[in-house]
Image 1 (cartoon, rainbow, N blue to C red):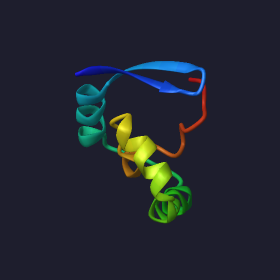
Image 2 (cartoon, one colour):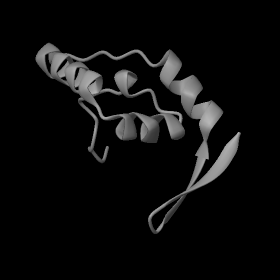
Image 3 (cartoon, rainbow, N blue to C red):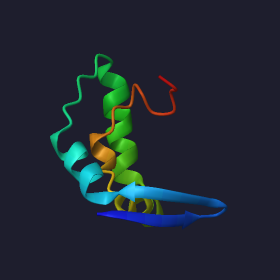
Image 4 (tube, rainbow, N blue to C red):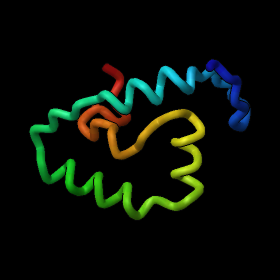
Length: 73
């Protein structure tokens, strides 16, 4: 299911089902364990607004690979 989400001046076409399926099966192979623990702690302390944003896009924040967040790879 692809939806268009308006966020400020941006229009995002998001495949919610595809994104959710991807994050459900994603296996994190993080070599820096402290980074992973820190990120997991951050996920637990996220505001409800932040959680809602990720879930609206179909992203499971806890399944993100902290080593690649913000990187252009």
